[in-house]
Image 1 (cartoon, rainbow, N blue to C red):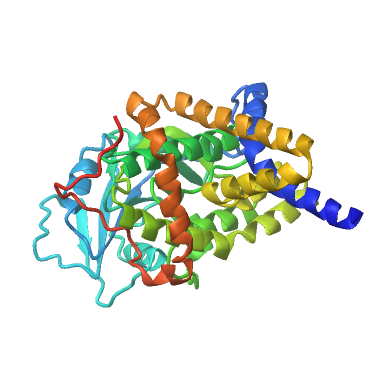
Image 2: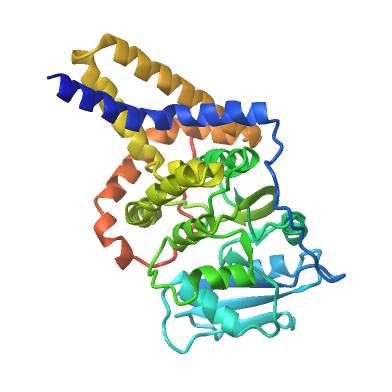
Length: 399
């Protein structure tokens, strides 16, 4: 009986630490003084024009948003870059770009993969770019995006993650998706980096030296979604840190419909199950080499998706109603700390009133994410890119 009870306690600890970790990291963040940890000793040197960027824009099947993202990129207040659009499995007959900085590429065969599209662009670079940045076909960028990336490349970092802010909050799903991003950008981005670890990669709005990207993923066997999970693990295994800057802003199209949400989350959950084991590797190396960067990042990679560990936590608290009143109190306290941490993230992001009003829709949002669990096994059969819609039939946010 004691063995079973000990096992039950251990399971609860493994689940429950996810609730309190954000607030613990935030306290460390306050104590450290937001110093950003130590930067690499070597400082990068560039020519007078700064890093030479190859901006890679990947599109799969859909091209309707490409003119807007290109127009946004051409407004960058920086001169040393070229834009490479990889239109995979796309009809490009209506796409015409007059600016010579825009190179439109259409692969001869369907690639259906982020890494393949990225290396297709790299193989067609018009010159030897020193750096690359990855932008989705539904993104817009802040005019100072590249200058803000340069701040950290200039300090010697070889990988930098920016912030993905919501471009649209037209439905309850889009608004809650934006709130979720605020939470993760704060704790998995700014806080992790500022206390000496690395920011997690977000799929777009991220930049690397071209050499690092090649070293990490050239001839990679990774298929489907989740290339960013593999890439960040390889970077950490090399002993490098991924920098984070909240000033390098990419505006991202949020999921606005329930069917989008289910398919997108099915892909994301599938990638977590597929790649979370990298966390064990990094924790082991962190302990072996006394590397705070690897240890903390590995622990973060082991964390299940938000709705999964919240659901498991509620389950544990419910079971304890028949086992231990003390445990119920501890679970309630943990939930209070988690909610406090969530609101700290929203406050840091200066969330508007619409974000807070939309929180009433969380149960519906969670329901569709639970529904996505039933589609995880078929996730790779869905399109590799989320389809976005701009019809007149809106699912309005609560007011």
